[in-house]
Length: 181
Image (cartoon, rainbow, N blue to C red; front, side, top):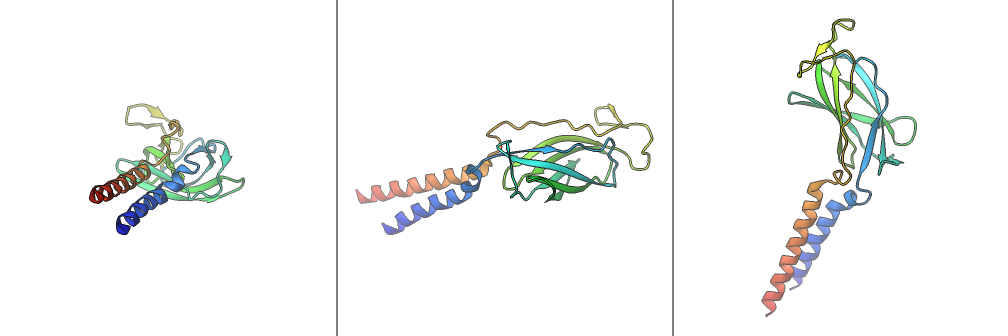
């Protein structure tokens, strides 16, 4: 009996440990600083951004990373605090031209999509526009915003751990009462 009770308490505690940081404050919004008018492959750029918990309060305890991806290649660049509270800077280098997807890992909050950025061919800074995959020409980095709905910031696997722990605990308690009959 004690073993079942202990197992139930342990299951719920483990579930709560996984969900605790997620449900306490739950989500954040990242906004980018202005970007250069042109971004070229092979050059490093400082990308600045501010993380605000609940979209309002600057969050100073993040361990953020800018995450970029193109055609299955994904790279990430650590962010360091810089300037005002909640403001971070990542040194980012795009290894090749193309339309890269940008996101920010707002650790401890969920990853937020930031949109796409057109990266130009490095050898021709004054040349013609780079053609995107859709056949459109682009001469400067246009960032297309990608909104994230409230509630989508919560990490689904954390809720799954809590649900699994709760089901296990209830099952063990039910088993205990069934054996007692």
